[in-house]
Amino acid sequence: MRHLLILSLAGLLITPQVHARAIPNPNQRHAPGNEEAQKPIAEANYSVGVNYQLQCAGCHLGDGSGSAANDTPRMKGFVGNFLKVPGGREFLVRVPGMSQSALNNAQLADLLNWLMREDGMAGKSVPANYQPYSADEVATLRARTMLNLPGTRGDLIKAMRAQGIAIDDGMND
Ligand code: HEC
Image 1 (cartoon, rainbow, N blue to C red):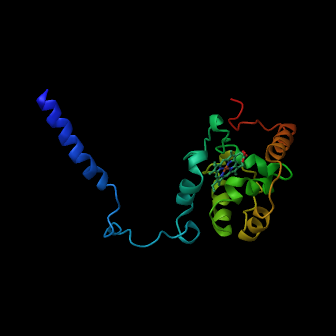
Image 2 (cartoon, rainbow, N blue to C red):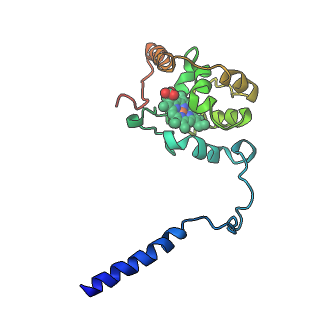
């Protein structure tokens, strides 16, 4: 019983000191190598793959397989089909994940052209007559807000179906 009393008294004495440690130390400095503010990604000159991992993979996953549970369609082996229907080319730039990303226009154009590589995410879905996106085209398209995204996407999917394209976007698996 006496031990218990001494222990709780000791606890009472220690508590304020434990809390005091949470107060920021005014002499604290940045960790070595971390002294400068981080460069914005639009100026950081990362490779396309790194830009994808930093800006897109959180939702689309590393390999573009997406996640139906999070309403994120599969790009892998499918995303190129949007280029086969009218309005699809514009749509790919105007989705919020693209148009509102922190990447600049040239980086977004590079990223789209990277997605459309046959050995990339689009795979065989990319049309034979694929014309690469330019930074200027991206600049114009991303500035045009899409008001009815689900309706626009639904119409594009319908147009693909009419062409006999299999809708393998992972949303109806
Ligand atoms: C916050 C989650 C999120 C992030 C981050 C994100 N996306 Fe998306 N993306 C989506 C969702 C959800 C859709 C489906 C359309 C919609 O609802 O916006 C989509 C659609 C797309 C589409 C059209 C394909 C389709 O099937 O609809 C492309 C292309 C795309 N994203 C590329 C990207 C790229 C490239 C990046 C990174 C620069 C990115 N996204 C970042 C969630 C995201």
